[in-house]
Image 1 (spheres, rainbow, N blue to C red):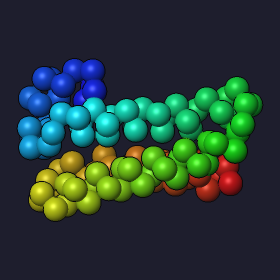
Image 2: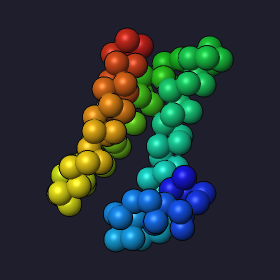
Image 3: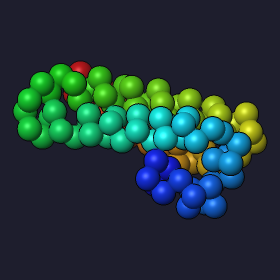
Length: 96
């Protein structure tokens, strides 16, 4: 939603108003590519070694987001980050 519905994202998440649009789109594209990188290589059996690499990268991106929310004292947002980090770490560790 952050990349394709920017105005709605600004209404939904307060932090989007304080960050340049290009960065918001970059974050969303990185998250989208990370999610595709987790699913597609393993599902298609084309370079499945990319699945744990993508999961690790996605965990790092989401961790950076959690740290950003901690810095801004947006503690309500961190729960979602923790869930996604845990899922990404489980996928990475089970696929390595």
